[in-house]
Amino acid sequence: MSLGFTALLLARHALLIVIPTIPTASAAATSVCTDKGYPIACAAPSSNATVCLATGECPKECPGLRVEDVHEDKCVDRRIFDEWRKYDIPALFIWFISSGLAVSAGVGGGGIFVPLGILLLRFSTKASTGLSQASIFGASLAGFILNSRARHPKAPRPLIDFDMALFLAPMEMAGALLGALIQMILPTWLVIIIMSLVLGLTSAKTFARGIRVYREERQSRAFPTREDGPEVNTPNGSQPCDGDGKAEGFRNEHGVASAQECDEGPLPSLVLPPDDAASDSAVVREQWKDRDARQYPLEKYWKLAMVWATIILLLLLRGGKGTESVIPDAVPYCGWAYWTLSAVVMAWLILFGLCMGRSAVMDSAAKATVDYPFVSGDVIWTYPSFIFYSLATFAAGIMAGLLGIGGGMVSTATTATLIVFTSSSAALVFIMAGLVPWDYAVVYFSAAFVGTLVGKTIIDTIVRRRGLTALLIFLLAGIIAFAAIMVTVAGLIK
Image 1: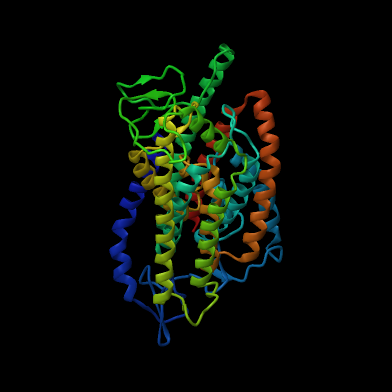
Image 2: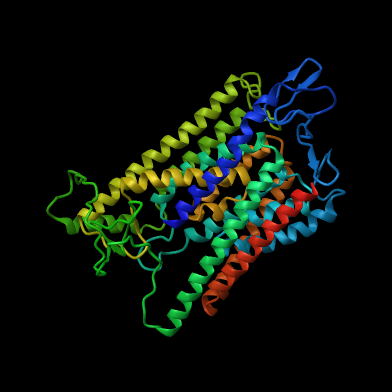
């Protein structure tokens, strides 16, 4: 539970930094540039001048698909493997290696991709953020393909919890889209400060996780017959369960029930379907087990595909500064139709997520009434957890879209499946806004995808055989700390 709470704290600290800057941005929104400055976000032309948004000075934001060079402070027409190949080729190799390492350790890789994009590829902070999202999309998609074939280690069902993904993915996508829009209007220095703070906190948190895993590994070696399970936060006053697998009354301080802790609070009641005999709980229990045992639940795949395809369609209809709407005459950039479609996207995601969350709560209640055999680590959804994780995941999505380092770092309370949908939608927003060249996005997406397929397979095998999980986590903690330093240095150089 501390993971979701950490996401809320990070979002709160970020808002405390962002809010004081809003009046300044608003006051400067009427300032006019008389030279060749370019508009930031949704500035509109005024006669022969350009209306600026962030500061009174003329911004250096590039028009169309031209990209700002972070070192020379000018706009350049970047084409991958052209005269920039001396930067592109080494970066591709690093992307390939780091993506598999990051996904294997449970982080998205954005903490590596963003600073490398600034220092090695010479992209601006905003372009690096968009490129990071495209790369995270490739890495998480490869991880999803591998995870979709895996089975749960303690129960006869898939490793991926699709009920959780259907609930949390839309909420995180909504947050990521909002974060991407916020990032476009914030000054670069503020984005760098927030990014450095989040990376520093994430590094400390990852290091603490490594210590915990190291202690667990030592215990498992000392007591090889002991059955290890994931750590569960048990509130004061609650008693551990006796291991019979029953779910009634299990709850922690945020209302999330777990098969390792007990409480006296009842789960919500649910009337069983009319075609099931209420007295024959064994039959109903077997039906739930058969339903959950399917490796590829097609109806859940279709729901995930539907929500993702709907968002892509709405974003294509909306368009952006770098990519016009598919119906440009009807949806001009930053017109009323543009903002209406933006609101529709957010509303669709939030409503879909809330409906799936309520369904997850009802399913958990139905399973509890028939003594479903929950195992260690299973989440039994209740209405308090429904509310808490809706807010926590939305906040994690905002940080992901704002900084490009969300992925597994900020949203560790969710699964890697969520990152596929979050990063893909956020990456498309950045690309359509003209902040990332299409060719770079496609090539580095591919590098991260292949790197994860190869690297995760090899690394997981080595870690499983040699028991080096803690070492891998410590390595990633060091990489994230180094990334925090790199981001700070890049900001000072800029």
